Length: 238
Ligand SMILES: Nc1ncnc2c1ncn2[C@@H]1O[C@H](COP(=O)(O)OP(=O)(O)O)[C@@H](O)[C@H]1O
Ligand SMILES: [Mg+2]
Figure 1 (cartoon, helix red, strand yellow):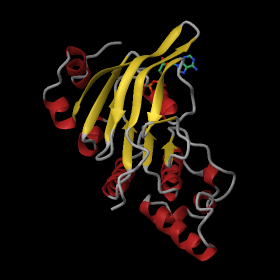
Figure 2: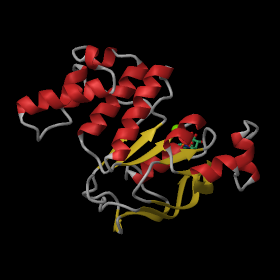
Figure 3: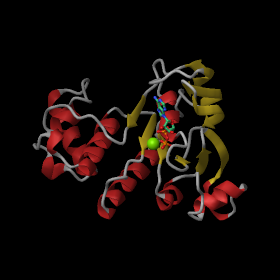
Figure 4: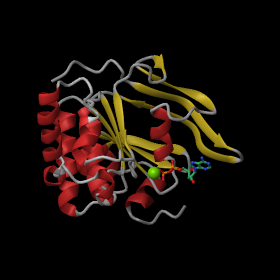
């Protein structure tokens, strides 16, 4: 078990993002605390991906601010993001992971690379050019690459969206292991079963706002807002 991450909590304070006339996020205030995984759920276009990009300082809010451990932005923070469509280096799967281990001595790097590929179920594809892998395989490779950095915070944007059930299970096991070793997981997912299985707390997003937050248990059994109830029921029309 690592010491509690110093980069946490991540605090969103009245964060808004405007693109021309379009309000993408509207006055989002939320706190991502150390501990068990947080799930971001909500319909397409609710702002989940945007929230992750803002947290990771890949975008700047139009107003409001994001702090990490009380400090502005991500300066020095140890975090990694796995995007839905990850960008692979034009090399083998193994080389993509090894690249994320720059401080590892050569022999150790090979061992650690193999270990990570094994963990995400890609050991048999180690020498395959990464860009030839299927979408789901690339998502798992991106996860291995992110874990290689031993992040304190790991953002996952719909990490199992193009995975079959067996690969989804593999990825969920990897996420659980990372969380148990002290990595804070923030996962955007359309898979409500997955949110239930993995998350301790849930932020339900709707139309650029955090509409409801709660402990996962409470949220899934007794959502507090009509919109969350409708979403869980598959009835929410945006
Ligand atoms: N650069 C942009 N310019 C205009 N609209 C954008 C931009 N980026 C995202 N959006 C819009 O913002 C909304 C939120 O997008 P996103 O964060 O991807 O939602 P989610 O991940 O919840 O599906 C969507 O309606 C999307 O089309
Ligand atoms: Mg998204």
